[in-house]
Image (cartoon, rainbow, N blue to C red):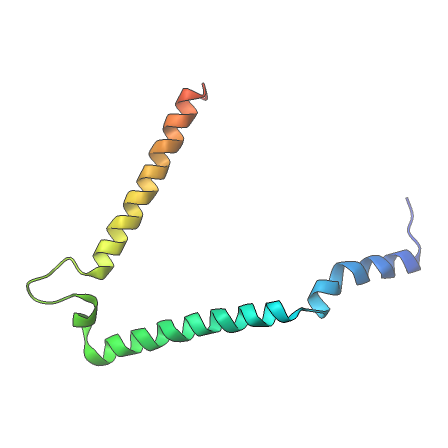
Length: 94
């Protein structure tokens, strides 16, 4: 099927419309994500200024926020793998 130049131009215009004409929601989403990144950078800078005690890394406490968060997400991923393996085995998969 051969397309003429008018059909190709219309197709290109339809496909590229979201790139050239963005809505206000896009800019609000970008502003929201930029605010999250700015808050993260401010928090990191505050930790560098004050010290690691902000995250719970003090002398008597060695399980601070970072290691606890890491262990939690590793546990979640292992649970997901286990559930997937159980469901695959129960479904007769090989």
